Image 1 (cartoon, rainbow, N blue to C red):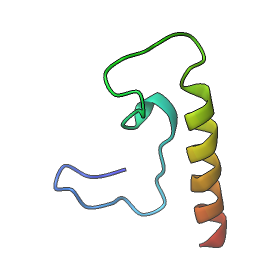
Image 2: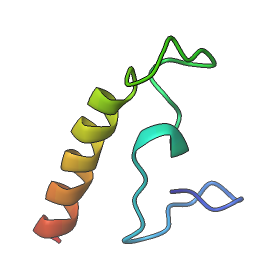
Image 3: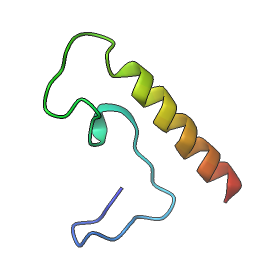
Length: 51
C-alpha cells in the first residue's frame, strides 16, 4: 500500500481487486481474479512472516 506521496506504508498489504488487477480495467467473469488474489496474498503473508 502506498501513501498519497508514493511512499510505502510499513506492514500494510493489499491483495485481490483492491490492488492493481492483472486483468487491467476488464473483469472477464466471476472467479477470474481469485487466482491472482491467492498468489499475491500468499506472497504478502510470506513477506510479513519474514519480518
